[in-house]
Length: 231
Image (cartoon, rainbow, N blue to C red; front, top):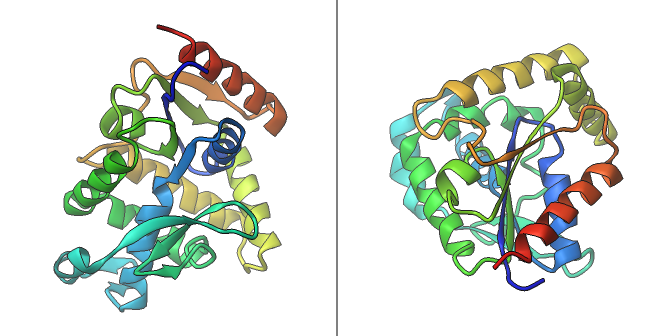
C-alpha cells in the first residue's frame, strides 16, 4: 500500500461493524477505534454513578462530570485486541450488556458528549492508517476519509445476531427485547438533532444480510487496496 488511508465504517447496530473493522485493522496493521465503545463508556459511568432513573438521565450531573472522564484504548498483550479503558480501568466486558445498550442512545444524543468524543477521535486519526467504526465517522469525524463504508442488514437478522451474542455471554434476554431495543436505537440514532446516523453521499453501501464474514471482509479489503493505490 502506498499510503496509510483513513477507513470510516458507519452503519446500524449489530451489522458487524466492529468485527469487520477489527479484521481490517489487524490485516493492514492499522489502528482500530470503536467509537461506539466510547459512548458506551460514558453511559457506563452514568449508570455506575446513579445518574439514570430507569432510562431517564440526570443530564446536568453528567455534563459536570464529563471533563473528569479519561477514555482511551490499549492493546491487550494476551490477545492483541484494542480494548477500551475508562479512567485507567479496562471496561471492555462491562459495556456490552442490555443495561448499557438500553441507555447509550440517550447519552449519544447529547451535543456536549459528542463534541468531546469527536475531538478525541479526530486526534486519534489525524495521521491516517486508521479504521474507525461508529455512526457519524464518514459524515462528521472524518468527512474526508479516503474510504467510507455504510453497513446495514435486515432488522430481524441484526436482532438475531445480537440475541445470539448476548446468550453466549449468559445474558438472560428475549429475542423480542433485543429486537425492540435495536428498533428504538435506530429511531433515536437516525433522528437525533446532532450528528444523526446517515449514509455519507460518497459511502459504499454494504448490505451483509446474506454475506459471510469472509465474503464481506474480502470485498472491503479489495476496496481499501484500490483506494490506497490512488495518487
